[in-house]
Amino acid sequence: MRFTFVTLFSSIVEGYFSDSIMERAKEKGLLGFDYLNPRDFTKDKHRKVDDTMAGGGAGMVMMPQPLSDALAHLKEESPQVHLIFTTPVGKPFTQKDARRLSKKSHVAFVSGRYEGIDERVIEIWADECFSIGDYILTGGELASMVMADAIGRLVPGVLGNVESLETESFESMLLEAPTFTRPKSFHNLSIPSELLKGNHSKINALKKTMALSKTKYFRPERYLKFTQRDSDEKSIY
Ligand code: SAM
Image (cartoon, rainbow, N blue to C red; front, side):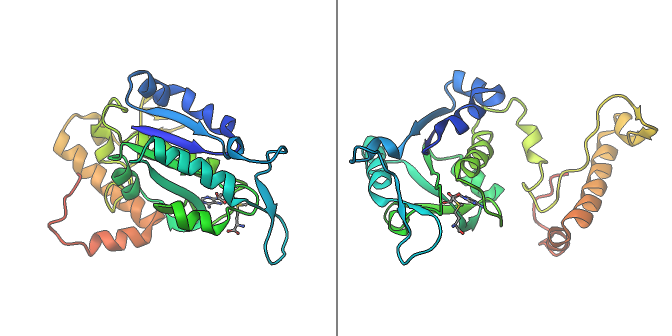
């Protein structure tokens, strides 16, 4: 799967995907990362990418021409590319979106800067617009990285242990049960003893109880949905 980051500040993104799991996925040819800078598509000698806001108001807006030309270039080179715009007014990005998008061959993320992107570019080019939460970031790079990470780890082969994905939080209505590792006791707190006895049906029952309590405490709205679900819904425990 290929990710393209359309950004004025590619160095912010490059570092993150040059390490650890993502770097290994790159080496194995499972994921590819490239960058496209709208500034390379400017037509004036100052390579200007922003302009004042129409109608007045504080701050600058990303001009339509350089960004639109960059996207036209990308679309011509890769007609199947799925174009995602990052914006705080977009729909909230979820695990379901990550799973759906992990089946695409090429996804590009467009990062806004300043007060955002001229709306007409979004209207012309966006396949989807996503927000990563109800707060304002300085630019779309972090949002793009968050989404690419969540999508990339779901591409088959990227993670070693695919079983661990099944019980992860947000794969079902329940959050994942708490996890532990050695030592048995730490600061006088012990690992629940059932987890150490090797009886898998008892371990699963305990994990489900812990997942239920955790969900009820941290995400009561998900707990409520879980308790009201159709009893045929797949249980992960
Ligand atoms: N003036 C805009 C508003 O109030 O909606 C905010 C612009 S923000 C300072 C600049 C860029 O950061 C946006 O164009 C977008 O690309 C990105 N951004 C900021 N917050 C975001 C969020 N919560 N989710 C996704 N992208 C975000």
